[in-house]
Amino acid sequence: MSLHDDAVLVLKDHQGQDELRQVYLAHLAAHPDGLWKACGAGHVTASALVVDPSRGRALLALHKKMRMWLQMGGHCEPGDGTLARAALREATEESGIDGLTLAPGGPVRLDRHHTPCAWHLDVQYAAVAPAGAVEAISDESLDLRWFPYAEVADVADESVVRLLEATLARV
Image (cartoon, rainbow, N blue to C red; front, side):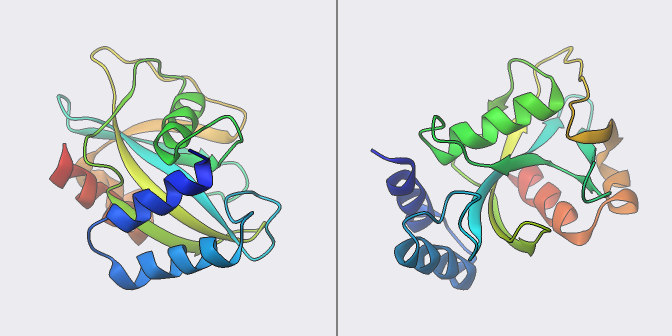
C-alpha cells in the first residue's frame, strides 16, 4: 500500500472533524502528489505531541522558522510508508527521544494551517515518551522544553492547546 493510500484510509477512518476531514480527502483526490512538499496547492503533513503522562508534561519545540512553540512534525518522506510512521519519525528526530510510542487509535486531530511553504493539512498524533526520556534539540528548533500541561496555553497557540486536550483524552 502506498503512503497516499494509507493517508486516504486513515482519513476515512478518522472520527470527528468531518468537514475538515472531507477537505483533506478532496485534496488527496485532486492531487496525487498531495503528500509531498512539492505540491504547491498544499500538502498533508504528520505531527505528534510528545507527552509524559507520568509527570504531567508535554514536550514542545520552539520552531526555528515559525518562532512558535509547537509539537514535533513536518513533511512526509517517501520511505515513511504510513502517516503514523511519518509522525513517529518526525517526533523522534525532533525530540531526540528513542522509544516513543504512538497512542492507539490513530490520529487525535486534524489541523489545517498556512506556513511559509504552503498550506499544511496536518494529521496529528499523540506520542508517549518512555520512562526516563531525555530530549535532545534538533537543527529544526531553537529550543526544546517540557511544559506542565497547565502551562502549555501560556506559551503555545490555540491549535497546540486543542491538540493537548485531544491527546489527554486519548492517553
